[in-house]
Structures are given as structure tokens and as C-alpha cells.
Length: 156
Ligand code: FES
Ligand code: FES
Image 1: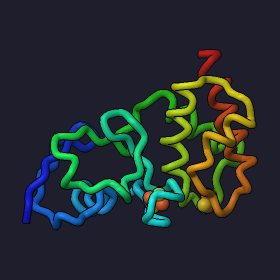
Image 2 (image 1 turned 180 degrees about the vertical axis):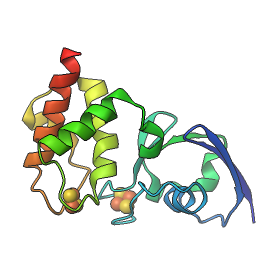
Image 3 (image 1 turned 90 degrees about the horizontal axis):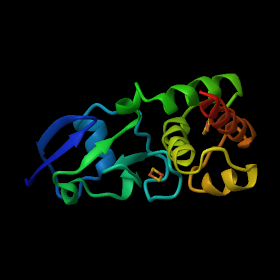
Image 4 (image 1 turned 90 degrees about the vertical axis):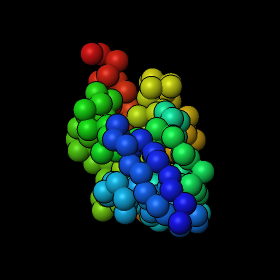
């Protein structure tokens, strides 16, 4: 089996893997990143959203073997990130989750939106979240949470 070496949340992870293994499976099985959830497994629902070299990506449609040397960050690697800390608080306060299955992908995506756009309109936020599906909340709580976080971070 071919070998691949990635940097995952700052740690070097090197494994012999099947060439067809997705990055999502690699992260869950070989790097213990259980925040990487699998929903659709074809790039639609956003549950598996992570960062590859600092950019948002769907880990279910990325082949681990094609990412030799890449720097991958999951929600576990953002535990000390100030934006994620505020988002966690805001999701709690504004009821941004129910079952929590979509939440890791939502948080990683919301961090990206806040860092790129700061405070934004509800309409724009809903557009930016179009690639992250939540089957429970109806999105009102999620949108309120992200707006709350962006506002709080602006005041810091
Ligand atoms: Fe990756 Fe749905 S599991 S986008
Ligand atoms: Fe259940 Fe979003 S909180 S899928």
C-alpha cells in the first residue's frame, strides 16, 4: 500500500493506506479526529468540513493520498482559537444546535465566514452556509449564533 504523510493539527501522521481512502476516513481512523462527521459522503452536506492548508475543504471528497505534505486542521486543532471559542459560547447561548451532528462543520465554516467577512447580513450568512446542511434546527439558531459571535468578536 502507498504511504502518505500529512500534518494534522500540528502533528505529523504517516501511514500506509489504500489509495482510495478519503481524507475524512484518514482523519477519523488514523488521526483520531472524531469531529470529522460523515453525512452524505459526496461533498454536499458539509459535515466533514476541515481546513487544508488554511482553506475550507470537504474531507469526504479529498483523497488522502493526493495530499502528501498538506497541513490539515480539524475542529480539534482549533480548540485554542479565539473565534472558535466565541462561536462555541454563542452556539450555546443562541441555541445553534440540537443533535450536534452538523455542528463541527458549521463551526469550522462559521469561523471562516467571520474571519473573511466579519459582521454580515442574515441574507449573506444564509448564502454562505448553503453548503452546510442541518437537519434539526431550521438554521435560525445557527444564523443567530454566528451573528452573535461576530458582534462579540468585533467588540473585543
Ligand atoms: Fe462530506 Fe457530506 S460528508 S460533504
Ligand atoms: Fe442536528 Fe444540525 S443540529 S443536524
